[in-house]
Image 1 (cartoon, helix red, strand yellow):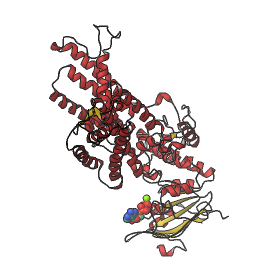
Image 2 (cartoon, chains in turn orange, yellow):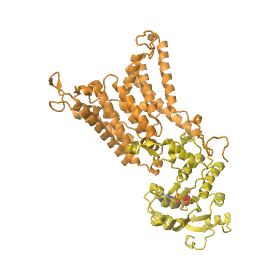
Image 3 (cartoon, chains in turn brown, red):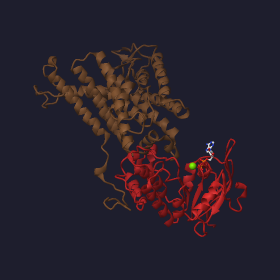
Image 4 (cartoon, protein in one colour):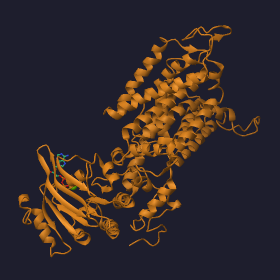
Length: 362
Length: 259
Ligand SMILES: Nc1ncnc2c1ncn2[C@@H]1O[C@H](COP(=O)(O)OP(=O)(O)O)[C@@H](O)[C@H]1O
Ligand SMILES: [Mg+2]
């Protein structure tokens, strides 16, 4: 009965060579291909004069053939939205969607910044102070905690509605989208909030956004791959009934997932407002869509259950390379938006096509 | 202590006006393998759902392992020692074999981390291999997601899940209904393993050959009632006799009210 050629116990094999091809490898190949396409365009397009996007063959100032300056910009550009995408990835894997993360960035930035303002600017009271006047600055931990608490609260409301009612996540978070935009404007009646403390300004200065993105990506890579939280997130997105039948508290878990996504979006708001040294109600426009795009490009399936943090990080890189590639070949901004939309649609179509092929094979 | 592992007394389930299960009196002894047969809609799955706490019964008693029980859900029943393979598979397609086996009861370390406690993948993998040692199921790699596995392999995973955790009672609702010949043979092998290990089993099945090959006793359901209790190991009972009970051509003495 048992197949004698297999080398596992009782015919059950554990053969590393038979492991399925990881989807992240496909995304990585796509990343390399896209880079090559832009490099080729730099050579082919007559007005580009044979420039290279990521390489620097002519000048040898920094001792590498890589164009470090541009690579830094590419990564810096995607880091803040990438932090949001880490949370959105978990939401989508659990079978949901979060459209509220962009406006949450706006609202959180306004609120956080008002706790991060310095009291004195050049010896005079801060002209934009929301609170006070006091004679002291709040320690930097206060705005951080306020921001994370706000993100957790918004996420908990999202998650609670989605878990306890039959409202589709799309609708629930669309409602929260408007609420957060409203909060952002109501907080200071539309006035921008500026002049943070030095400590706060340091959070997002220079390459700090990249540091936060890499750090958080590493943390959530471990969490999604090696902890019960991660396993249950995949299980719920894969087969919610099976998860429930297996004893997983699906409702509580969903609330937790949305809370974490809210906290990550709020943290992105902290880094962004620190980097810009100001907060405006309109901050974070389109971020929810870009974050979803990064996840989907990175192989996170919109039907839930599939995807990974590594995929999303690669997806963010693809996103960044395409964006700066467009600028590199001097594509006008409105064409860039259209092309970005087309790329997002292609990624979703590709994912569905992949699923159909997998279904046909089985 | 008695050797009865499960007993139901007047177990009844009504769905509004539908009397899906009516006064079922059923006894299962330790180590015994019993088949439940009956036409579609006879109430077999309903019977299983009442025992496993998936639904709450209308009336009647369930005595499991010597104690009256009121399971609030399938998890409750599982914790008490009843493992069930439901007719609709409860598997997560995107997870691999050990993940599915241990879903909801993962082996973990660093438990002080709460929901972020670490999975002990190695222990779960080893337990999976050990639990499946005798099943002869060929799966290319247990660490691939089960999405691309055949129906038989998936069913074997579902069954292995119950076989891995030494349960006091295993219930399978039509485990081979959707399987091919070879896959059916694999599932039947697992059932024989359970028999050798002395673990009691309730097997819902339409397959007469399978039933006569595997079990000690057949209980026949008809229109929500038990209409026969047949000791096929010790009495001279043929497949045709069982069919006659299923269709209603015959009713066993003592079960006249089911006629
Ligand atoms: N949730 C339900 N609501 C109403 N009627 C039901 C429900 N579940 C089962 N039934 C009815 O109960 C009867 C027994 O069903 P079931 O136990 O599934 O039969 P079997 O498993 O023997 O084929 C059928 O008439 C079926 O239509
Ligand atoms: Mg049934």
